[in-house]
Length: 503
Image (cartoon, rainbow, N blue to C red; front, side, top):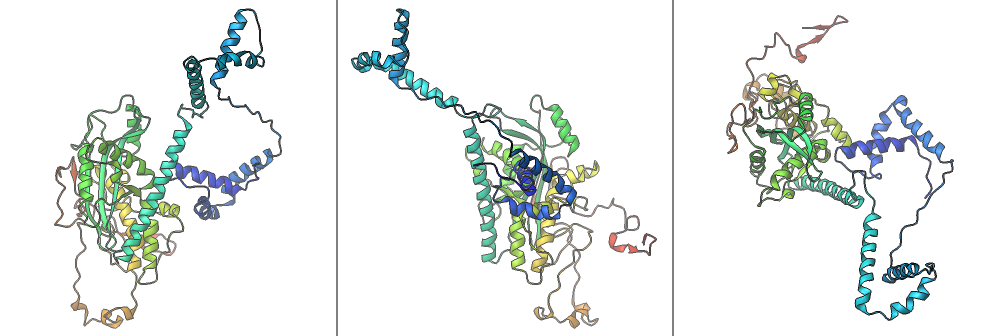
């Protein structure tokens, strides 16, 4: 097929597709218009100029003629061919020079009189030649890897992506049918690592530094959690600089052998499996993490589970958090008891962008003590998972009329999320009853829940709850924080008339 003229939007789609592939998400070109169109529509003319220039260059080169050089492939050879070459060589040694076109007439009578055992030598030569032809004609990558292997891995990744989408869709669908969309429990995980290295098989390998996991539901908010630092004796040989650079840019945990953790990655992964197995409705429910973090978590789990005789790495499913939010928001919007304050996401890409905002990166009660002390709050694994859970709850829970509690549905001392108003005909009380002074004493005002894990939660066995190893999240209010007189809340600030903010 001849090359076609392309529009600027086509080159923009290719760039978005490449970025998604780097994050472990493989979208076909047919799926890209739905993902890229909302972003393209919001771009300015200056931002689109880059892709318009690419389209001009591409379309201008179509008219230029280029000479196509075709190299004919080598042919497979029969045993008789190698016999002819041998006869031709012997005749040349005798001073008789026959061309290859003349050799069939000379060699055929001899070949016809030969036994099967005599022909076996030439049949073996033909097998070796044809076998080498098949291996040498295959396309290789710049690293010498057979391209058929690359295509196989791409097909496998696309299959995993398709399976993941279908599993998440079915999980939300079953929750709707069982009327458990608000009480359904989801698991969120994040793992910080020291460095990325390459194993003998060429696959990426990650040395874990910190692990945090929690479970939450829209109705109960954040319920349980587990957090731990890893113990690692040495780094892979030759990766000290890479580990130093990566840790300085991210979590700033001490490098091996000076790690602050006492838990090995094997112990931590087994505790994670015990943690998620406590849910009754599924033997091994999926664990969700941010899209570009899926390869990290999946690689670490595969390394540990592949060393256990009784475990199968495929039993632990690591799925996309934005895929969960996309389908969960669509479900809560369709099941909304009131007019939904926020519309569902047009694509998974927009759901991912929503989670990537980091709305709660600096909220109170999210990070561990270590990262709070060194002022690396946004890079803490505990901050990541709590922030993702709060973001999903803030997006989906208001559709179902769920009342928020501090520490469970939103961070401590945060500006309250506007709660939906239920129509008067849906309540057992009238609007007059709720605002009447006579009836105010009939309602008790419970204090906000400060500990989202609950007093009944117990630390998983095998991991201690010391400050330098692992612990349940501590969301109690820190008395060392300044009072509201030093740092007033945003809701206590009033706008002045052109003279700044007035307290």
